[in-house]
Image (cartoon, rainbow, N blue to C red; front, side, top):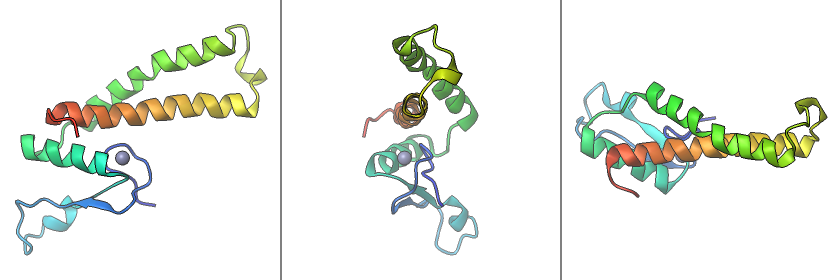
Length: 120
Ligand SMILES: [Zn+2]
Protein backbone atom coordinates (compact mmCIF):
# COMPACT_ATOMS: atom_id res chain seq x y z
CA UNK A 1 0.00 0.00 0.00
CA UNK A 2 1.38 3.38 -0.96
CA UNK A 3 0.98 6.00 1.72
CA UNK A 4 0.57 9.75 1.58
CA UNK A 5 3.92 11.56 1.62
CA UNK A 6 2.51 14.12 4.08
CA UNK A 7 0.30 12.36 6.62
CA UNK A 8 0.88 8.63 6.01
CA UNK A 9 -2.79 7.88 5.27
CA UNK A 10 -3.46 5.58 2.31
CA UNK A 11 -2.61 7.35 -0.95
CA UNK A 12 -5.60 7.93 -3.21
CA UNK A 13 -4.51 8.97 -6.66
CA UNK A 14 -3.09 12.42 -5.98
CA UNK A 15 0.49 12.80 -7.15
CA UNK A 16 3.36 15.21 -7.60
CA UNK A 17 6.60 15.08 -9.57
CA UNK A 18 9.38 17.65 -9.45
CA UNK A 19 8.70 19.97 -12.40
CA UNK A 20 12.29 21.25 -12.27
CA UNK A 21 13.55 17.88 -13.48
CA UNK A 22 13.25 17.12 -17.20
CA UNK A 23 11.55 13.92 -18.33
CA UNK A 24 14.95 12.42 -19.15
CA UNK A 25 16.50 13.29 -15.78
CA UNK A 26 17.19 10.03 -13.93
CA UNK A 27 16.22 11.71 -10.63
CA UNK A 28 12.68 12.47 -11.84
CA UNK A 29 11.07 9.08 -10.96
CA UNK A 30 12.49 9.26 -7.44
CA UNK A 31 10.87 12.66 -6.95
CA UNK A 32 7.39 11.23 -7.48
CA UNK A 33 5.11 11.41 -4.41
CA UNK A 34 1.57 10.20 -3.77
CA UNK A 35 -1.05 11.77 -1.50
CA UNK A 36 -4.33 10.91 0.18
CA UNK A 37 -6.08 14.15 -0.68
CA UNK A 38 -5.99 17.41 -2.54
CA UNK A 39 -5.16 19.10 0.77
CA UNK A 40 -1.97 17.06 1.31
CA UNK A 41 -0.99 17.39 -2.37
CA UNK A 42 -1.45 21.16 -2.10
CA UNK A 43 0.52 21.40 1.13
CA UNK A 44 3.43 19.49 -0.38
CA UNK A 45 3.29 21.36 -3.67
CA UNK A 46 3.22 24.74 -1.92
CA UNK A 47 6.13 23.73 0.28
CA UNK A 48 8.19 22.63 -2.72
CA UNK A 49 7.38 25.84 -4.61
CA UNK A 50 8.44 27.95 -1.64
CA UNK A 51 11.50 26.11 -0.43
CA UNK A 52 12.48 23.86 -3.30
CA UNK A 53 13.16 21.07 -0.85
CA UNK A 54 11.46 18.84 1.64
CA UNK A 55 11.81 19.87 5.25
CA UNK A 56 13.38 17.62 7.83
CA UNK A 57 10.63 15.07 8.51
CA UNK A 58 12.16 13.99 11.79
CA UNK A 59 11.74 17.43 13.31
CA UNK A 60 8.17 17.70 12.04
CA UNK A 61 7.32 14.18 13.18
CA UNK A 62 8.62 14.94 16.65
CA UNK A 63 6.48 18.07 16.80
CA UNK A 64 3.45 16.09 15.61
CA UNK A 65 4.06 13.45 18.28
CA UNK A 66 4.31 16.11 20.98
CA UNK A 67 1.06 17.66 19.75
CA UNK A 68 -0.70 14.37 20.54
CA UNK A 69 -0.01 14.68 24.26
CA UNK A 70 -2.81 17.18 24.97
CA UNK A 71 -5.61 15.33 23.15
CA UNK A 72 -4.37 12.02 24.57
CA UNK A 73 -4.41 13.46 28.09
CA UNK A 74 -7.92 14.85 27.56
CA UNK A 75 -9.16 11.48 26.32
CA UNK A 76 -7.65 9.54 29.21
CA UNK A 77 -8.95 12.10 31.70
CA UNK A 78 -12.46 11.81 30.24
CA UNK A 79 -12.36 8.03 30.79
CA UNK A 80 -11.18 8.50 34.36
CA UNK A 81 -7.60 8.76 35.49
CA UNK A 82 -8.09 5.88 37.93
CA UNK A 83 -8.99 3.49 35.11
CA UNK A 84 -6.01 1.33 34.14
CA UNK A 85 -5.40 0.75 30.43
CA UNK A 86 -6.07 -2.97 30.90
CA UNK A 87 -9.63 -2.10 31.96
CA UNK A 88 -10.42 -0.12 28.79
CA UNK A 89 -13.01 -1.63 26.48
CA UNK A 90 -12.11 -2.34 22.87
CA UNK A 91 -14.06 0.77 21.81
CA UNK A 92 -12.21 2.90 24.35
CA UNK A 93 -8.85 1.62 23.06
CA UNK A 94 -9.92 2.29 19.47
CA UNK A 95 -11.00 5.78 20.53
CA UNK A 96 -7.61 6.38 22.12
CA UNK A 97 -5.81 5.25 18.95
CA UNK A 98 -8.09 7.42 16.83
CA UNK A 99 -7.35 10.50 18.95
CA UNK A 100 -3.60 10.00 18.64
CA UNK A 101 -3.48 9.00 14.96
CA UNK A 102 -5.89 11.74 13.84
CA UNK A 103 -4.02 14.39 15.81
CA UNK A 104 -0.68 13.19 14.43
CA UNK A 105 -1.90 13.19 10.83
CA UNK A 106 -3.56 16.60 11.19
CA UNK A 107 -0.37 18.01 12.69
CA UNK A 108 1.70 16.62 9.82
CA UNK A 109 -0.58 18.30 7.28
CA UNK A 110 -0.59 21.56 9.27
CA UNK A 111 3.20 21.38 9.60
CA UNK A 112 3.62 21.12 5.84
CA UNK A 113 1.16 23.96 5.31
CA UNK A 114 2.94 26.13 7.87
CA UNK A 115 6.34 25.48 6.30
CA UNK A 116 4.94 26.36 2.90
CA UNK A 117 3.45 29.53 4.38
CA UNK A 118 0.26 29.05 2.43
CA UNK A 119 -2.78 27.28 3.85
CA UNK A 120 -4.31 25.15 1.17
ZN1 LIG B 1 -2.34 12.95 3.42
